[in-house]
Image (tube, rainbow, N blue to C red):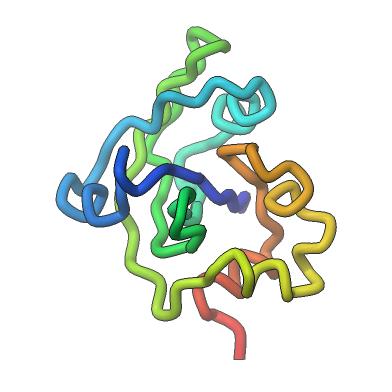
Length: 129
């Protein structure tokens, strides 16, 4: 299983919007590396929903329903809402965790789709004791 973190401006599309909609197409991604990650996703891929801007906080989860990579420059990724995180995680908290030291989330701050390790995913969703 692969895990990712998707970033969005909350005034453009917030987790509350996602909860209301239930599912959506994740689009508007232009960075070639982020597009590559989207194109390679598979049904069932889990991801963390992260608010950028002034918030800079991971707030919820989602799951990939389907990926249509017919146009490799603009993959159509349909996603469904997961749950609010039990404990939202701020960028300050994320940076304080050693496991994120070499993460693109920290190193490439403008990347809108970021791969996560299993350990990082579990830290976000609270599956670790």
